[in-house]
Length: 84
Image (cartoon, rainbow, N blue to C red; front, side, top):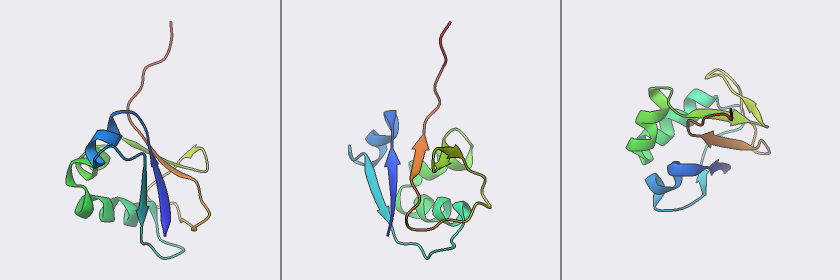
C-alpha cells in the first residue's frame, strides 16, 4: 500500500482525511497513481488531470513517468501563493 498525504482543501475532497492508502505495485508510475485516484476520487482526479494539483515524491515535484516504491513519501499539493 502506498500512503499519499493530502494538504489544504484537498482533504475536503476525501471526507476530511489527510492520508490515503492506495494499492499499487512497486514500480508503478505517478500516472498509475493518478489513474487510480481518478477512479476512487473523481473530483481529486479531475484536479490532478488539469494539473491544478501537484504530485510530490520524496519532497520533489514528480513527473507522470516517475516510478514509485512503497517507501516513497508521496504528497498531493494544492495551488499556493508566495509572500510579498
